[in-house]
Length: 205
Length: 240
Image 1 (cartoon, helix red, strand yellow):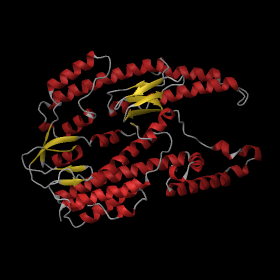
Image 2 (image 1 turned 60 degrees about the vertical axis):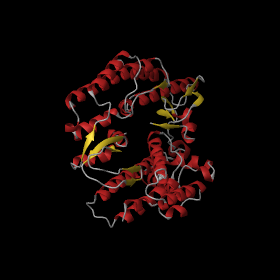
Image 3 (image 1 turned 45 degrees about the vertical axis):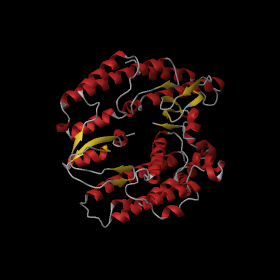
Image 4 (image 1 turned 90 degrees about the vertical axis):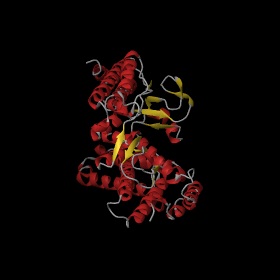
């Protein structure tokens, strides 16, 4: 799946804006938004917020969690905890990225925030890699992934399910070929387990 | 013309699918239409709900290894809704705020629908014969393929067969042509997927050795698809 689809899905999250125009409520299929009154905050989907911001028709109010102290706390918590902590938003990376790229002026201390959010993401990513390593070595087929956000799940999608599928396939093949080695005329057990361990070692490098 | 007219649910809704639920929802939407402006709790639940269903179907379809149940009813409803809104909008000034916003939303909806159908076609082309065979075993009400998709799959299969026989297989000795059954490509149903539980489900078998876990609402898991396929079908969980 393309990361832009993650962004597309993340763009549905609601965000507060302060419009500089007035308009009646709009009845969108997603639900109604508005009424818009100049100077008064109103919640709109992120895709609308970024559009209006680009047209200079509003200011974006950064979400509550997009603030240095809160994020420091989250970062510390994330470092301390063995597990993944709950993020303030299911799409925190998407929201942060979109808000900060379209409206850097609306976010106080934007650059610092950018760094710390990236830090949090990196800590989580490395935690994710370590646990995947342990998971695959433990030969599991099932795991719980609570509190991981969509983007983080997506970052391991190309490798994790794929390698698990392969391992499962080799296992099946090994069992099958023990039963029936004559059909292909070769004994595949040796080569299958050989490649199997190779795909394991992908995670240790 | 006010924007709330734009929301008005199309008459087409009623002639759409024979499902009772759908027409009730359409009535709801009509009730909403006739309602006065300040009535807050009469939200346009219909179109919104249809869209939600389609979005879930879209993401499920993207991540499931096999073809899932078709959603032509929902698609048809949404298409008529989109067409209707466009009809209402065509008199608006192209630079009108309302026009731009509605247009943007419609583009998003159209993208979801197109991406969803595209994803299904990809699966149909990859697993043509498998899907046709499977579908033949289901009852009329549970068919995975919509009538149009079934027709497409059938034609695609015939064309591929003809092509292969024209360029290759007829020049081969008989025993190498092999049996048609051996050429069937099947999806790997045991491939691992990411899952999010919608409701509490207890006693889901998660491994080959019959290990069981209880899923709590909102919890996320990685698990072989086949073990949870029925949960997806029953909408107790969704793929992410």
